Image 1 (tube, rainbow, N blue to C red):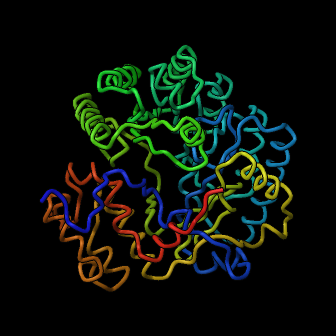
Image 2 (tube, helix red, strand yellow):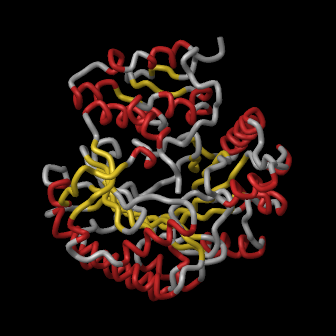
Length: 445
């Protein structure tokens, strides 16, 4: 048999980049003080994530927390609120040190240079960021400029991620993405000629009308720019997105079948490996022998993350929290307006998120370890939870039996090539019943 009977028969279930999924979050019974959330946490190796929920345009596939072309006063009020939140959080979490820093969105470079400089000052004045820590930022072909690139070089940005998605015009039209190829080429040339050491490029496969030939053309175009990292995303159709609205209206399918997606993934994997890239996860490929500034040790399974801004999530051992989530323009704008009105006192507490029992902590540790090239360490799990993972997750043996995983010489459980290809089924397969129920009940707004 090709797959275990209990295993999802659909390969493309969901991307398990975090656990639990945001659709499992709910209002807490009562507000929890931020100081209480962080009181017992290890805070010497934190990840700082800053969310900018603004874009030049909203792509048809996008279900991120963002709004296109906001009014100028909304942006100014947002940065004011971000400053209030940063000051409150810095005091609430106490002595701390950040060893990773990322600015995402949305599109952070939608902001003007002076606005980016102001945010940089807010963060560096109020929070303890270790010198020369890995620092990444997201951009788009329409919003990156030479002045912004120069500023990133001055502020030690080490990674710029840019969403290109496709180099083929009709595929971009299907994705409802207005993009000029000359802007894409100029943006990639600009980043590659800068002092920022790592360029990441995102591509999407599984688009209606996309063929293996057109997919390979996009991959070949990307490799010509020699990015240090490439991310390959299978196309998912999400509720309330532009593509969802169009499909409902036209009663047409705008996404390829699973077998086509898998073929595209396999060809892309082979192509990138042949072109000197190493696979890190199902989506991520990195140049072989790339020397990165790894900075101090950070472990996503055990070290916390602090999120700032509307839509940003914060992770501690026992509590994950954030503002509420939405996709539709109307509801995203409403949440941003509420965020902009928050006082210093409002930022002192959280009202929305997920409290992790030890069982949920175990699921999180397993999923975040197994879906990465480093694999899942039985000894790390046992040392942390004082229990046997095979006793609690007997389906791990099935992964080995069906050639989805193997044990390496250090006794780590790692996904095989076949297993990595099935990551978007393995992740959901390992979700707890409680989280699955909450996700099922959730209604996207």
